[in-house]
Image 1 (tube, rainbow, N blue to C red):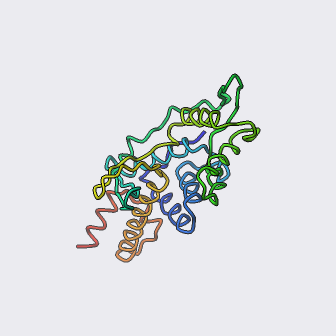
Image 2 (cartoon, rainbow, N blue to C red):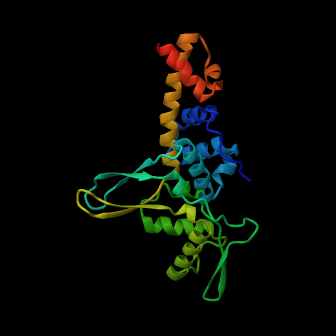
Length: 241
């Protein structure tokens, strides 16, 4: 059971996640963020299914954004233009969460097929696969106890639909029309990347605050971070005056 996302008044988790995340690829960074906001061990965070992972990270993002939109980035499929899309963290799905005690299975042509939901480790296994079709079947093979032997295209589509129904938060997309060429673009929403961008911005701002207050008052980093945001802002104003 994952605990609630870290309190945003406690800035230490952000700095720790930012420091480690700087040296990581996006998949490792997603695991680091999940560990930071839940206290999970890395191996457990790695095995957390993607819908649960992104729901927890979306909650952390919502708390950091405090009601404001954050910006997602997609590239137009028509002309390649970079498109910045506002995302409201409060609107991101949080469930319904499947019951982990209930086996996941679907019936195809009278046959019951068991499956599990993908996790970050599965995405890591797909990292070197450039062919989307090959990646799709590799992912299915990892999520079916008996692999994909005997699974045809129709069965694969039914299994994928069951996966999405069990964990809708793992398949969130952005849809936008390009203002340059008017082509519609649909792209997967990368919740860990959105949270990382917010953490990175806030971590750098925190370090600047630590720098100013340490120089002004001789405080250590833990001294500064122990202050509430309101008190820190007040001291920053005094130091500037």
